[in-house]
Amino acid sequence: MNVLVIGGAGYIGSHCVRQLIEAGHRPVVLDNLVYGHKGALLPSVKFYKGNLEDKKLVGEILDNEKIDIVMHFAAFINVGESVTNPIKYYYNNLSGVITLIEAMLEHGVKKFVFSSTCATYGMPQKLPLTEDHPQLPINPYGQTKLDVENFLKACARAYGLSFVALRYFNASGAAEDGSIGEDHKPETHIIPLTIFAAMGKRPSISVFGTDYNTPDGTCLRDYVHVDDLCRAHISAFSKLETPGSGNFYNLGTGKPNSVREIISGVEEVTGLKVPVEYGPRREGDPDALYADSSKALKELDWKIKFMDVRGIIETAWRWHKNNPDGFAE
Ligand SMILES: NC(=O)c1ccc[n+]([C@@H]2O[C@H](COP(=O)([O-])OP(=O)(O)OC[C@H]3O[C@@H](n4cnc5c(N)ncnc54)[C@H](O)[C@@H]3O)[C@@H](O)[C@H]2O)c1
Image 1 (cartoon, rainbow, N blue to C red):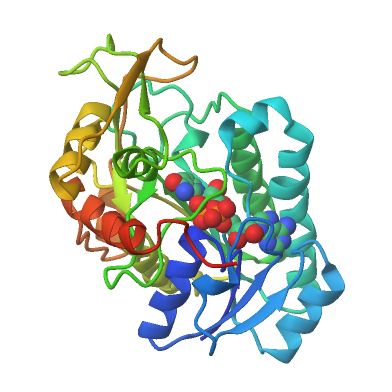
Image 2 (image 1 turned 45 degrees about the horizontal axis):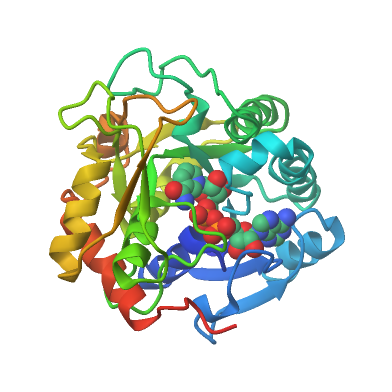
């Protein structure tokens, strides 16, 4: 398949590009490089620098590259920033997708894979989270993702678009060969931040709250390896064959780890001490968030390779140790 990967120079998108090649597909990347890195892509990958809301450019790519499927990773992802600057998030994460789908329909491309998130659920009423859990997001980031999910449902009904929305839990880790990895600027994710504290790239890692209702008092989250996520995307292509269909899948291991476990895991894997600073709880952080991914495991025949967070941390460490400043720009 010819697959347009929008946001393919970003963290998850760039791993997906490699997995697509491995699976025998031909990825074409569109990314504006606002947050992505050209260095995350093999030189052989066809790359367009541009905005997904540029309908003319998207139309040309769809026609010239004979695109069969569009994958969308190109959202802004900083939850805190979405609270302080919602206009930025609604424009890029929602309005951008509306323009993109319009361009796809005008050019006869009707298969779409969307990166959604467990943030669409909001505060958990029941764990593990299943796909039918109420979706009540508590920040604009999660709300824009839910709005897109609902928009896609309407487009499936009205125009015969077929789509899969994958609700990721905490994407983490790096390519097993250490060739690419996570390089968000600013970084907000706990595994890279803890590794940076171990390496002395930052003074410490902050632990927000030690009085949660969990075995060690720190929050439990579901860490899923980035390559496991990407393999699920490719398996999901089989679900795009029926025009007008929409499918939703959770992608997590279902086996959560606490903040303290991440810190001790990083210390064991790196052999370095992690300086820790303890602070008060943050607003909106539930005790635990983890997935029931049985639907994806069954319907997508998804196999999770990295069930243990230690293995995830090992891949992340390999990347950060050899690339302490991330990708060369
Ligand atoms: N990282 C996670 O743990 C996580 C969890 C749940 C869901 N997600 C979703 O996965 C997707 C990818 O996340 P990521 O961590 O790889 O983010 P990322 O910031 O590394 O990658 C996003 C890429 O999209 C590009 N981009 C953004 N807006 C664009 C636009 N308008 N036009 C063209 N390119 C644009 C950026 O330059 C960047 O390369 C996002 O949609 C995010 O919401 C991520």
